[in-house]
Every structure is written in C-alpha cells, then in structure tokens.
Length: 249
Ligand code: PGA
Image 1: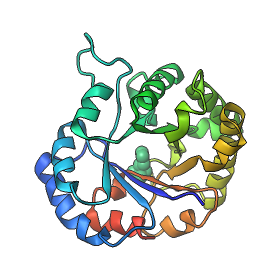
Image 2 (image 1 turned 90 degrees about the vertical axis):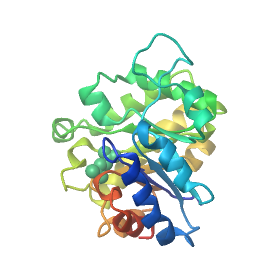
Image 3 (image 1 turned 90 degrees about the horizontal axis):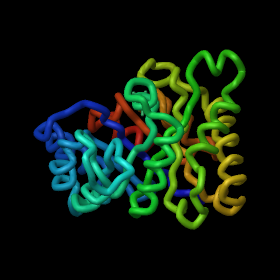
Image 4 (image 1 turned 180 degrees about the horizontal axis):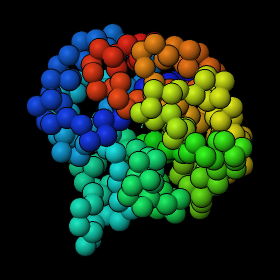
C-alpha cells in the first residue's frame, strides 16, 4: 500500500500575509486527516511564513525549484543547503512551466534531482507530454525519455525518496483533466521505466502523482485508480476549502 501524497503547487501566487491566511483556514480543515501526506509548495518568499504557520501540524512545506550547486555565483538561484536550513522537506523539480518558459531541460532536471536526493529532500519530479505529442501518439516515448534522462546516474538507494508527478501539459490550468484511465496508463509507463532504472521492488513502492486540473469534483475518481498515488494541484490548491476537499476526496 502506497500512502498518497497530496501536494499543492502555488506557482507565483500569494504574499506572506495571504500565506498565513491560507494556513489559518486550511489547517483546521485537515487537522484530523491522517490517511494521506500533505505538502504545500509556495513561492520562495512565502516559505518562511508557511513553515511558521504549519509548525506543529502534519503539513510539510516544499519549494518549487532548487539549484544543483550548494553555493556559488548563480544570481537568482536557491540551493539545497538554504532550503534545508529553513526546514523545507520537499521540492518540485522539472515542472512543465519551467521546461516551457525557463529553459529547463532533461539534463538540468537530472542535475537538480540528483542534488535534491543527495541532500535528503523529497523531490517531486514532473514529467508529461504536450498536446502535439499526445496527438502524434508519442506520449509513451516522451515519458520514457523524460524518465530515463531524469534518472540518469542515480542509484536505487539514492532514489529512495523519489516521487514522480505525471502532468500532461494539455491538462495544466486548462480545466481539461486526463481521464482516470489515461492517467493510469501513463503512470504504468512511468512505473515501468522506474523498474528498469531502479528495479521492480523500487517501482512497486514509487509514488506517482497525477497533476493537471485536479479539482474537488474529480479528485475522488482520480484517486480511486490504483496507479495514482496522489495529486499535484495548482489552481485549486490556492483556496483552503478547495484544497482540503481535494485532500479528503
Ligand atoms: P493546475 O496545475 O492544477 O492548475 O492544472 C497543476 C500543476 O501545474 O502542477
């Protein structure tokens, strides 16, 4: 049995005050909820407010990106050491918006992933096809390539904390959700790749989240799929009631 991970990706939304307001309203809604793990990933500047607000609760806090060097002349970047010093436990890596708009490649995803795992952070590594790739029938190839490149030169032992998020790019922020069956099929491809890279036992335990227009009204159908081990939620995670409803599906 894999414990589901319900993750909020706030992207570039909320100030520290809005972050505090969110936790004030959200925490009572999930206080008795022990079935799933919950993580909220706010923008860097809200991490401090989020960590303080979530203290003493079961809600973990994650970042949305991390650099692969511990320190150096890399203006605008943030390292694992900084995140760990704050008390951050999770980090999103290779989100499609970073791939699309900020030059993220399969190789930089691999570098970030390696570093995050070595530092003891729990990476949520995102993969997923764009619409043209799905329509051309190359979804499986894209997922295999993204996984192989992301997992390059990482041992099963090092990868123990790895979490993958399958996010079909055509479903992100569009209101179009992959059907539970489409998602489950993609998850099976990813699990198979993880099996090739890290062994069957590892693949069996690997958590693969689904992301892309997850809402309170589709969360339970998605989470009912055995292959789906949680959700990475963007838009619908900004509202405490809506994210709580998704978590409690
Ligand atoms: P969405 O975003 O839920 O707004 O579609 C998901 C994501 O990008 O992680």
